[in-house]
Length: 115
Length: 114
Image (cartoon, rainbow over all chains, first blue to last red; front, top):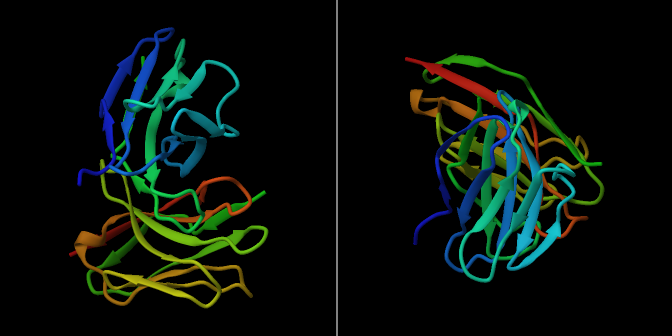
């Protein structure tokens, strides 16, 4: 049973370009979470999705960021018109259930560098 | 809102030393508490968890006890190894929100020297 798969592992974008980060949850998991880790900081929640629905996007910046989790295929975190401050590690996690004591499994992250 | 505070690092230890990483939290209700470990260049791995007061989570020689009275979940290991060098994150689940949304502390980097 493969773990949470994120790709690419490393992504370099010039300012103003778009970044697309992909996350395939573990088999049987329909709950996906995205977190951002700035250098030397902890992870900050961005968005929670459950197949085709955004449940909680309270941590998402209001502009340029969007997320989706289609019926088929991976979850996508999209950042439009990237700026230097978007440089960070973006982690995806998935869980089988939506309860607060259910273990969330994390991917290895995508490290975005904006130059 | 919810928050997690953990001791700042880096923490540098010699092999076989005793490790403690302090973690305190602020939350409404009774959250579940977690310790995650992040090895260099890797994602987070769940180390241990506790879901109610006085529960003790343990794994790989690490232990942490859910102390409701002091709102703490300190991580301990009696004898560390070089392979324990990593960043450790304390986290809580926000039971007031939908799903298993986690609030993390800032992380504590631990370096174990031979």
